[in-house]
Image 1: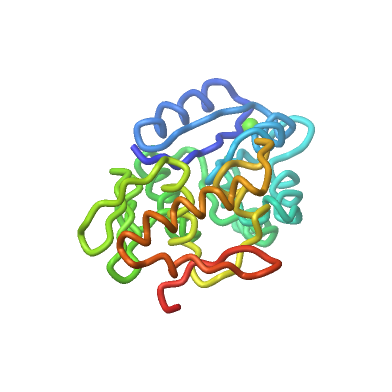
Image 2: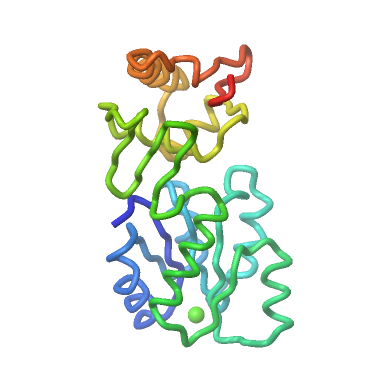
Length: 229
Ligand code: CA
C-alpha cells in the first residue's frame, strides 16, 4: 500500500462504500458525502488526489472542482470527476474547469485504480512503481526507503516526506509556508522555523554522503532541491 491519500467525495452511501473498499488496498482512503465536508477534510489533512462525484447535494462536484482550481493552496490537487453522465460535452466541461481525468459509472475497480495511478504519476506524486530516481538517489514510497548510491539513509517520516516532495519537484524554489502545506498538511499549526529544523537534520544526514548541497537556501524565500547544483 502506498502512503498516498485519496479523498472520496460521493453522497450515495453504497457507491461511497464500494469506492473505499476498492481503493483501500492500494491507498490511504478517506470518504465524505458532500462538498462542504470535502472542504473541511482538505483543511484538516494532506490529500494527494480527490475522487469527486459530479452530482452532489447543494454544491455540485463540478462547482467544487472549479473553486478548488482557483484556490492557490489547492489548485494543484489532482481531481478525478466521477459521473453517471457519459456525454462528450460533460466530459469536455469537466476537463475545461481543470479536472485531471473523468471516470464514467459504472467502472471496474481495476480501471479506476489504473486511472488514479496515471493521474498521480502525471502530477509527479507517484513515480513508476512508487519510485522516484534522481541521479544516484532513489526514493521508494511504497517501501519507505531512501538510498544514495545504493546505501540506505536513516531518515524520520517527516524528512522522508520532505525528500519525497523535493525529489518530485526538483529545481524549483519553495517557501517555508508552501513546504509546510505540502509536507506537514495545511491545517496543522506549526511554526515556519520547524521547516528549518528538519532541513538542517536532512542536510546533516546528506552530509554523511557529501550531498548537503542538494538542498539550497534561497535567501529571503525558501529552499530548492537540485541535483545539478
Ligand atoms: Ca451522487
